[in-house]
Amino acid sequence: MGASANGNGAGRRRVAILVSGRGSNMASLIEAARNPDYPAEIALVLSNRPGALGLARAEAAGIATRSVDHRAYGGREPFEAALHQALLDARIDIVCLAGFMRLLTAGFVARWHDRMLNIHPSILPAFKGLDTHRRALEAGVRIHGCTVHLVRAEMDGGPIVAQAAVPVLPDDTEDSLAARVLAEEHRIYPLALGLLAGGRIAVEGERVRIAGHVPPAGPALVNPAG
Ligand code: GRF
Image (cartoon, rainbow, N blue to C red; front, side, top):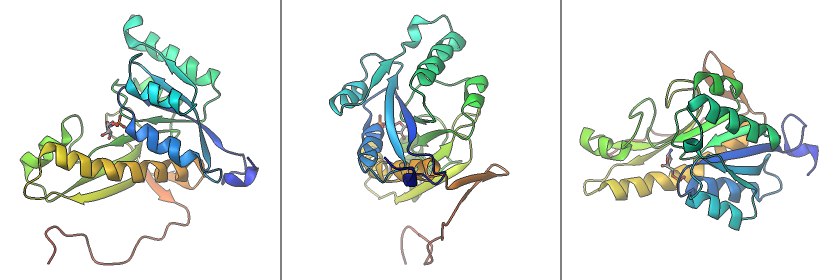
């Protein structure tokens, strides 16, 4: 890969994806990185759950995997020390959390400041935490969606890189709404990683500025329309 693929002229960034479950967002990042012009390569998929489906899917895609089982460590800090060592061993530049179900300490997060992304299934700052689709339905919101953000110590907090909105339809169930949001997750996570790895993101006052980004002109997204 030539140096031109990266906005910093430094070649492709080496990315680790951290998963705990099925890994569908992981798969969307692996797919995006198959394009040689994409500024990131997936160098490692790591899980805290040795049986995670995401690990098997990554192996099938020919990606290096590791599991660091949190139950084998006497607390969060030794677990994170092992995690950090695995990332150093693989010479990782950027970490992507993709359904990684462990809270990370402020110390770990600080080591990856502005180099760690997370995807969350809501339009943050609404609906931080779990069960976002159920809570969106209960709240009666007309628009729901997903967010990719840089990770800070506060759970589901941090500068927002990309968001996508979907309508909430009258007959939606948690599952139908989750599926509509997930399709958007698979679109915006590769987009956001591409921006970060391509050196196009600047963080100013905890807000993300994207170099060369022209906001789309047009009517506001309103649901229901008209
Ligand atoms: C996604 O909905 C993601 O937004 C959330 O956890 C879920 C992970 O799904 N953080 P998958 O493992 O990527 O399929």
